[in-house]
Image (cartoon, rainbow, N blue to C red; front, side, top):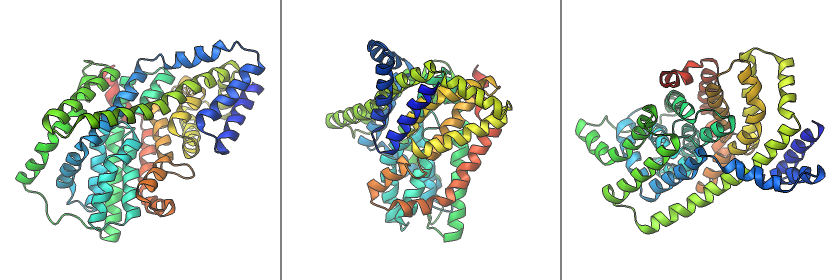
Length: 426
């Protein structure tokens, strides 16, 4: 037990010192194996075993889908349709930004893909129509939280593989929370628009204008419908859904929009290789780390500590919120999921919390962490893309935190918001 705590402490010290997260995980794990005289073959066994997972195959495929959509400029079609549909609402393009993120969420599954892909289009359009740069960035990173909640979701796939929970149940459970989060963010934009008189479209679109914007976007809009219907009907698994979506996006990009060439495909595959490698190498390293914690009975110690706190599932959910909200402020969502979920999940589920409900609560907390200092990845990515100061973006983000925290509270204390649809297909 003492060695397990020491391994955790060394990891946190290295991480806070700025050591790359994979190295910070690997050094204490390797030192433990050497000091305990464990056969070195155990390193290879644990890391390879972690990657021998069919659900994890969906991660690089969904990353490829998002990259192909950016390369083929499908994001432009999505944005134009959202602009015509909701651009007249108070807040104008800020509302378009939020609604467009919901549509894009149905194909990318990652917050950073939303910020780096559709976000670039949205920020440029908002700047061209007179919105301030910090506010444009703030709306973009706040709405990007929808991506990892609404299916498909890369963080939920990782959670499912670690917690041995049905990935289909998790992804389908994200439908209502994703819609709820979108609605809350649109209300927040409405409130900001009322105070600052933000520009918006001069009039509502005519049916012809709406149709003309819908037709070019329709093939792209059909992708999330295809994905969700396929999983709901049980026709294919999330991993198979990822492959089907990828083939579908390739087909419409090449034969419908005709904006895709071999260079785009090559660039998308290289981007997928870089992004998925950075995720999966952490998965492999964290598997060995988690095995060490299990050997040292750290989860059991945490279970005992929780018993001293309370056995009430609502109190334990509050503890989970606190743990993962703080973790999300300091550690990226993949690392936090891989390190903390094996420790936290067993006692909380044993207390009566549904693992699907817990998964959405955990991931939503971590996603709020991506826009919260000191290490909010989405904050720093959008700052790097636009050169806007992080402090200015954070100030513009303040009106959106109440909307996100309200959504989190509803997801925590009204489990049916998450479990309603999964229960229908169990």
